[in-house]
Each structure stands twice: as C-alpha cells, then as structure tokens.
Length: 252
Image (cartoon, rainbow, N blue to C red; front, side, top):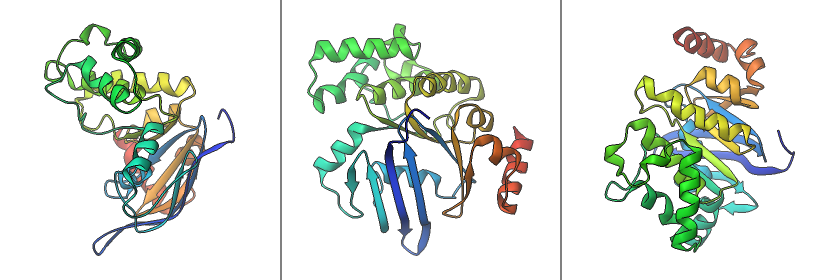
C-alpha cells in the first residue's frame, strides 16, 4: 500500500430494492494506492456496493465519501456526480462502448466534454493509453470490429482517460470468453503495479490472490471477513467463508 491516506470511506451502508435488503451495514475504508478485491457469491451485494460508490445506485442509509466528496443517499446533484465520476473510473461487465464511434472517439469523448481538453490533447492521451493497454493499432476501428477482450481494454483506457484517482471494476472478465480473460487481467495487473487505487469485484481467484493488498468477503449483504489474500484464502475464520473458498478454489 502506497500510503495510509484514505480515499474511500463507507459507513453503515444499507441498500433496499423494495422489500429486498441488499446491503446490510457495510463499513469499509480504502487507502490511496491500495488494491482491494471484493469476493462473494452471486447476489451477495458486491456489484451494488461499488455502484453506490460512484453514484450509479442510490443507497438507503449510511454514508459514502470518495476523495473528500460526500455522496448523499438520495438524488445527488448532477454536478457532484460528475465530480465523483472524474475521480472514480468504472469498468463494467459489459463494455458499454458507443458502437457508432471509433475506439479513439470513445476514449476522447469524456475528456473533451467533462474535463475540457482539446481534441489534440485528448487524442494524444488516448493513443498513449491504447499503447498502454496494447491495442494502439485498433484506434480507428469500431467496437463491433474488436474481440470482447479488446473492447474491455478500450473500456479500461476510456476510464483512465479521465485521469481518475480510483478505479472500480465490476467483474470485468465475466462476459469474456476464457481465452480473452488473460489479456484483460494482464492490463489490470499493470495498473495495480503502477500504484493505481483499485476496488475489484471479481470471481478470478488466482488473480485476486496475486494482485490484492486486501480481500473482502461479502455474504448476504454483510462483510463477513476480510484480510490479506493469503490469510483469507488459506486460513478463513468463518464457516461460511471456508465453504465459499473451498467451493471456488476447487473449481479454479
């Protein structure tokens, strides 16, 4: 971990969808430079948690602070959402690229519209990012001309183009064919090694164990256990955590 400065603070976070109580009192802090993986079974609340962190979901009770910006539970102002999303880049399961725009246009759109960069500066930056994610030769192609792994790397470059202080990943490899997973994970490893603060929801256990400073296990909307990946994977304390790792590690 690069520093002890806290960039994300979540306190007593609750989220309801009607009568369904999805998050049940989540407390969590993330330090600058820390890589945190969020693990748990499908439906445990992992994706909802990180979607609340950048305002894609409202929450019912508690508090969220991202880079000293307090995100209110209900109806945050658009200006505040823009400020938080400048600092918290998001990469989704689906790539969410504009199909009618080229790779270069997808990456340069937000820096020009939100950060006010010139076309020349944003295109220079985009080409550097495409080089970083190893697909510079595809800058003038459209998303439909790329593989799933290539599209997800474009999505990562697009998020990085906003120069965020924090990157949120919501199961970024879950929609990919198995042979395309490694190319996306390689880019994420490079980001982790560069000191980027990252919160990653993933089912890629070997990757989680390799790159994370801390692993957080969520079960039925609660953080049941957390610690270093080594401790959590090899010596879980809670019976439910033991059962989860026994199941997923057997499958991997």
